[in-house]
Image (cartoon, rainbow, N blue to C red; front, side):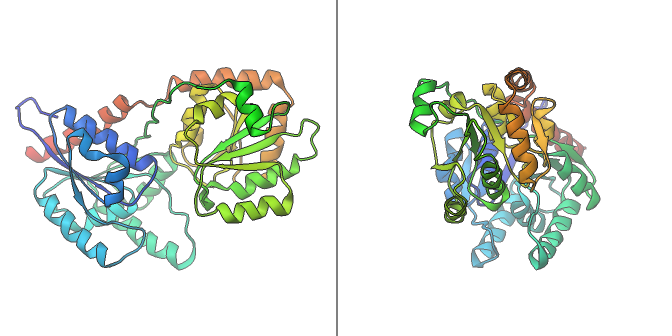
Length: 369
């Protein structure tokens, strides 16, 4: 990114351990910045470079092991980011952990942008510790970008000065590669409704509530089958819960054929306790699949009127909503049409990059004056 005076900005992007949408978002920004003439450095764990390939965009990568817990590596990461922050015109940290490292190391003479990608869901003493980090990051950042309106409200409550809503974009998926009936037969649902859920098997996703909802529908005359695409640390607990309840749920593990699964599904269900800008919801809308899910985080903003929303941690309401859509072809068809219309309003890589770059320009131009 070159300004009208012809000077190239140097931008440091700081990222913590991640395997999902945060890493992809940083990759999108790194590419957009390079395309516009910026010198870009990404600082983060080695695993993020291995997964997301920041250097393939032309950015430089410097290892800084910002993990889930404080350690000796955290001390090294602080030193690395402090050195890099002095050599760049602007620092942009992604997530609370990366934001805390950047807040502690970025000179006051450098603008600091922090994107909040997730809410803090921990409780007790851990929640109190995170609360201190939240306040530090919110008050130190020159500008804050949030992926959902509830995070905007939270950061403002903590004393942040310059806060904007900035949802992230979802990647375009390839089209289906298999016949719909073949996929349904493979999954064991050739002649019964198929309810799809996609996400990491983690407590935040509330899959125990989805299993409870499926159990409530096990006696429904249509015998819907629920399938969950994804893997993660909660797999063993979920497998045990499915076995104990005999709920009609299958764990599919990680899948590379989400397009095929969406084409085969009659409905997508989301049971999350919290979400920011969930990629699965964007994928569902683009595929025109009826959606039922929890009214949490950024989900209502993404959906608009294109889905049926229920409270989180309420399996009974989730089951009732799924039943209502499956029992009404007219409602399902209406939701499908609304999903396709909502997909046209989703943020794109270009619109996301434009918003972030406009923020950079405002901050660095002001600093130059």
